[in-house]
Image (cartoon, rainbow, N blue to C red; front, side, top):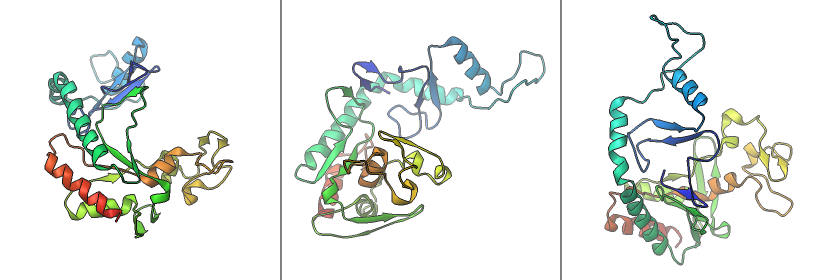
Length: 251
């Protein structure tokens, strides 16, 4: 929400779009979300499903399965009350992003979201991506991760564990869907075709192309990336401590 690509507001591409109002989002109601569409017929269908697919009858009558997916009026009111402050929230988040970017100069990392002149992000969550040659050894299973320290190198697991010791909350980048256990037997598509046909990417953690670069970019980002504390109530002093902690991980 509040981001754009080539001058077009995100949430307006394609037939359907969804916006989350989860507690960590730039506009939040603590839960819930919103479906966006320009298709009136589709909108009416979704409204029906979200109210248990009740038919227009004086009693409860159902000709198809529906769900109780409505956002409560209270949550909707909280969300609506925050919209006038969207630009203010974006400015606060951008300031946090810029402080991280400045503080990490000289480290073998890059910041995400990327500022490339094409997209205008809303900066709701600052993320870090460690350069490949600066990654220490890291192994992840479905439920835990291990790493081996190396001078001048670090990894998301080491940084997150160190932040936790100082009561600062970070987290890994979202794990790609094709690496989730429930989808381990499903095919996925890369820029060179089927990923499963090349290797069991669930076990190996990635698929390399003919040029040696990762085909499934999501796996690479998951391996090297982490989400940084980005609350807009975070003070400059608190953020400076986080920056210093991360710097020391690369000593």
